[in-house]
Image 1 (spheres, rainbow, N blue to C red):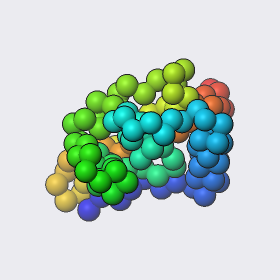
Image 2: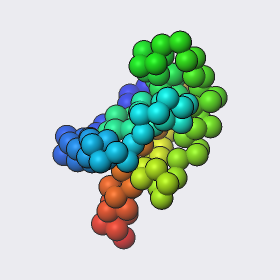
Image 3: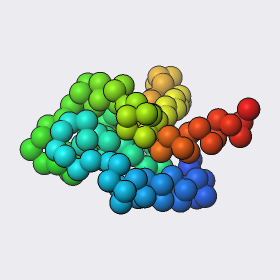
Length: 120
């Protein structure tokens, strides 16, 4: 069984407030491109697998059919300067199978750089 990485409440609130501010400021586009759909689904505090993102995208945008392969490719295109977001990745070992499960999320670049400065 795989357990999703835990997100402390203070971190969740901070990330989600920053994402909301970016949307209100028009920094996140609503244009219906595959990249923007992936940004809409993956941005926020929650960690998601590619399978989770595929399911979420099919619920948010019925009829588009975004595959895990395409989602992975779009996540690789995320650029902090261009999009204001940073892709974060975590791996968790599945105790049953011994395989690693990859989790992703997009967080505001300012959160990422602030955390990195604090860790240094």
